Image 1 (cartoon, helix red, strand yellow):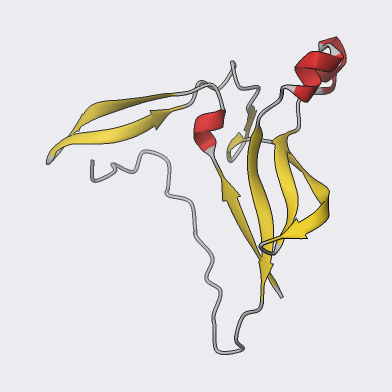
Image 2 (cartoon, rainbow, N blue to C red):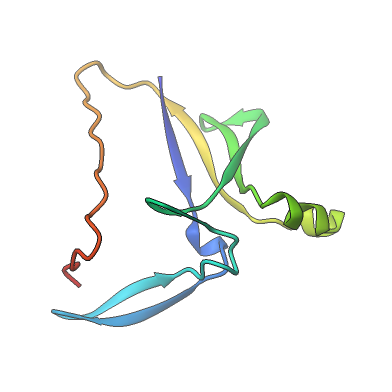
Length: 116
């Protein structure tokens, strides 16, 4: 069994805008690091998440995903603010054939120029 995870990054504090690329305008999602409580580590910028098991499975969806905030931020929130935290996505299961391969994606080296 494999897990399929879908995240809606636009549920974070974000903005969509067009930036100039080599071949013209490119649509980009801008996500502020500090405003979204993202964690800056040695090898990247991370969004901590928690998956909550659903009581009723529908369309193979087993969990919903919300952001896991730093302890001090979470403790400072009211119960209403905690309940209002957006659902970022879901986890669903699917059966994969044995011929299916899984590939890993290596991060780009620092300073790599993207094609846009």
